[in-house]
Image: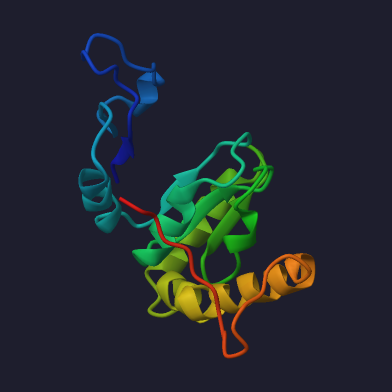
Length: 161
């Protein structure tokens, strides 16, 4: 198994984050890459590893899940933990239990339909489901300031380019 450390080499290619000698030959380090390149790596992955703590809502979690890749996540992470459950991946607390979590994710990734991250995301998120949640939130907190058509069933956001 080979890991990929994304954006751990400087843009000029002269500096890289250090990795332990035991990881030499087992880790590929990249410069900053495009989303398309990142998704290419993700598609080949058996899991996505999120060891960080100080991240309010890493989008890489939902990107991995949407691409049907389970997540191995630090349970001390500030945000994004709401996406992890028995269908989407495994938590670890620290070095004392990471091996067990890693074994479970590797073992269960080989069992058909044990992890179903994409299916779970589709059943719990998306325009219809999240849009209904957003509509409920807006009505609950801003109904005195916003008038919506009576037939509004959900709200969606989109970026203007």
